[in-house]
Length: 438
Image 1 (cartoon, rainbow, N blue to C red):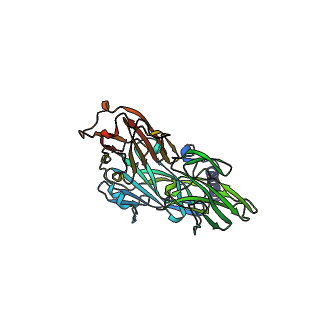
Image 2 (cartoon, rainbow, N blue to C red):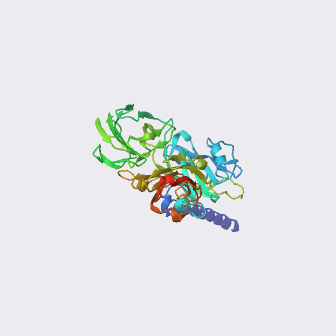
Image 3 (cartoon, one colour):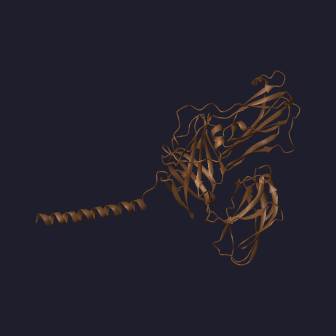
């Protein structure tokens, strides 16, 4: 009697355990929401904690994390808490910036099948968006490599790394189209031809460019015609601008071309996120999907508690001249500073991860008694700081003797552009000092 009662009770227990497991699985599938589900900037993206995730036709993983130490050494890790052996193609720049910039480089694999379109970083513990204020920045260094920057303060020890990427089927198919009016290339369903190319942003009527809306934007507007044979209705292709060094400028708004059934000739007017003078050619290839996902709780390589030095203070000789200088001292953050006679800008604009200045229509004004200083920064969106030095005394010019006439600035997700105009002649300016950081 007691044995029967024990066996009956054990069967009931096993059934109850099975029922609880089924209910838990159902709850997980139907009702559970990830803690980031209601945080808008995460966009309900799928996540992983094990360093890899299925994305389109590939399994994307963190190939390595590289972080510079204050002494110039580099530490490599897998994001899961273990050190690994790896080598960054940008190692020297990581080392050089070690004293003043907390720099983490993130490489995704498979490298030839991943194309990063957008990147976001969050403090894992607080879910705070890192780029909401001053102190942090980032830059895309190659299609599968992103660098993350901390100015004057280190990055949080654990991050959520969010990506929007193309994920291409291997082997990757690419068809090269020269960046020249009249150029053509053939692909499996026909031919694509460049009908027009113009700098900046243009308004359109049908498939024709009407007038420039912002010719100084760092973009390229094209008219492309497509002569295609019958293709599956689901077949989609994308087109991308490519620079001579391999950097990519993706289309704005037009994500892909969806072919119609039956023979047809039609046109599109894509806008590429790359200045026309940097476009070497275009690449036509099957659409990569624009997949969003994030790696959750990524552990950065541990570094010493030695504080960061202040960012470099860079002196730029002007000597009363109009100049344009790229300041290598801030590498890998890209900084360009310029001086112009007169009040030379109307404003600044930004979109996505780009920012740019809008020159004054008709040219600078007050060229004899004022000057402008402008800047463009890739990798940091906060306003830099300047000091100006007198051409005669070579001493800093007091603010009381440097009346500001106008200023402008704009920032994108990873860039900043801006400028100031002052009421003294450019001839009175000996040099500029510039620095970054909050």
